Length: 117
Image (cartoon, rainbow, N blue to C red; front, side):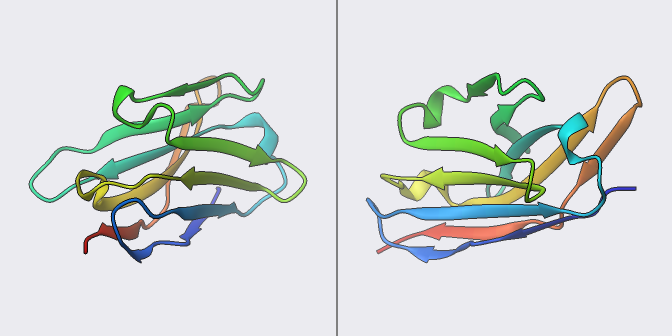
């Protein structure tokens, strides 16, 4: 079992920055592909960014060039640096850990990001 705890959300003005963190429990963090998803008001949950166990990364088109995902296996933590934030980035952001071989799929409780002036 892996427990994920997100932090770093909040209220920020358009053009501002936030850094989300997701701390994972357990000692096998490195075997999980990690991802950030978000769900805006009235919208479906969508993938924002993903980083594999081999540090391959991909992003949603809407955040390319503005968001950066990274992981620190020594700290069991994945990060999402969000720059040049826009009102449409307002959402609850969720951390996800997945291992397709073990058929493990874990979610955090989410952290609210609000971009507004």
